Length: 290
Image (cartoon, rainbow, N blue to C red; front, side):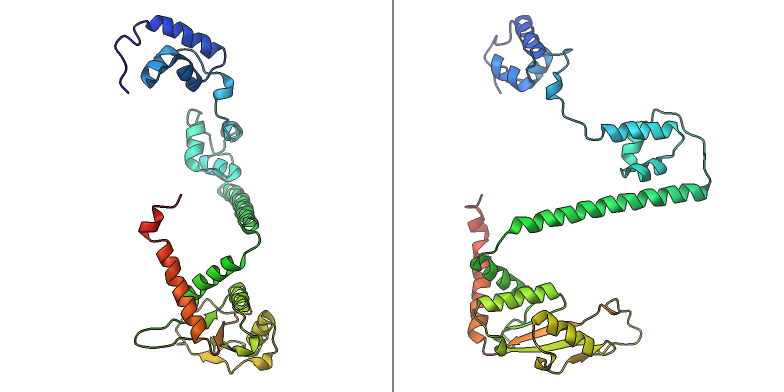
């Protein structure tokens, strides 16, 4: 910023005023506004040598960790041990204790490994708690969905996971497949919003041939809230013996396929809404958003 000639000619006079304000507990910004000094270099020169008031100092959340790290280092702990104990980065440990003498080894490799494993377990537990808390807060922030919000969410979900019409293969019908029970429940709630009666649904399990088909059908029947007799014959998927599959075990339930009869109009409405969403977030529209 340009300043008029001679604005800072009386530097010593300005410095006396700045120091007086500093000692009175003013922050740099307050001094700037009070004295109309908008040149940061000049402002810093005016208060040079005068410590800032305590209230302007940012709290250092890691001061306790730093003190503990130095204490442990003086007790002979290694960087890795301190990192595992405090759950902080190794670079932070190095920064905090690098001026202290290098300790002599005071434990066997087995003891050191056990201590590190225990520290890592505490770190992972802390991370798990933080992860869970973030998810709980995000879930709570959603609150109750309006019908419009549910409709848009269902359209986006269907476009991601549902069967879509292709120019070379006309399939204007709602058909949805997924292995996540919560996703299935959301899709069914969306169909309820669209006033689709459950008797218009054809339900079928798609699962690997080596799995427990009967148990899978019972599981999905409970999710949907129907009798197993309502299911069509399951689709059994074959795989090569050399294929390494991770979706195995008692928790594997395959996928549920939901086919909505007489749903051509609903499909067109869904597809039209999707492209309406795409158009609403085009670059031209983004310029009008905050």
